[in-house]
Length: 382
Image (cartoon, rainbow, N blue to C red; front, side):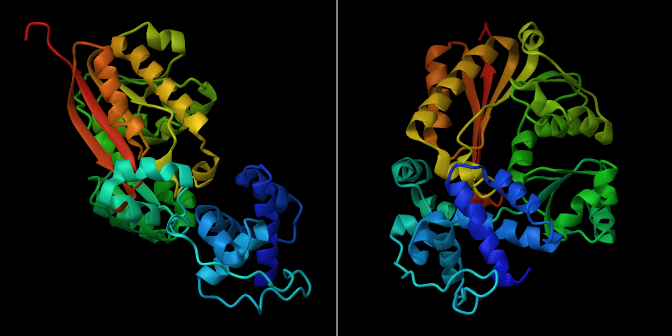
């Protein structure tokens, strides 16, 4: 495909996304109907699409319209590329560009949803502009060294064309600096020596009070990334639970590859036991990971936020009785309502708990945005 044809393909995918089709599904449908497109073409179109979604408001202003064509045109102008040689209307190229650029407003330039701006400003303070700017760009790829020394694993990855550097957020975090698409074909990946995990997510696990012999419940386990990271830190008896068990379908294979044991438990089994530590990585807006999942920035509504706040409070109320000692509340959100305010409300409802530690990470720290509130039962005789 020519560069101009790739632009046309991205325009068509974005039009489907704007009509309500998830971007991944729109990309799959396009690829199935475009057998002539090679792997390089598919990767290029995918990058164009997700860059446009991350920067929807600013690209729409620069492109003259909030359409697939406007977003791609705006992306070229944002990069300082003259669209005329590509928007020619010849062959598979988009029609000549006649749309006029408009200077984005401050919030448009930061690609911030209008209704969320006051909440994000309140939560982020002076970091607001810097964080929103960071969320306009692709997230780095991070690995967690599951086995072996960090220097040895870096050499092992480099032999397969994956270059890395240590990252200060977590002791065993590696930032991929080259060859990211080769990670899952590398020997280190195949042998379970590394796992894909954001550095901030690793930092959250490192902050948990884990000791050999503890029983741990990962109540909202998802794919099990934090369960695997906890298992690598200490000899634990870990039970992983998720409201949608299908999300954990790959966990047995991942655990076997890492050489650890993690039990998958049903809701009934999870609620019928007690644990030394309960981790609740709750459903949230995902605002801290919008670099990685940018569609969420535009699909989130006030009604959905209120729904999530209710779900988070309900999960906290459900899991609190399951913990003998520690309760770890985690979100990948930047919003105060989902983080500190949610824990303030929990503590007002439940006596006998105290907040021991609170960690807030944003993309300015290098990884995704995360919040951790670490709560402990107050001893009865204190």
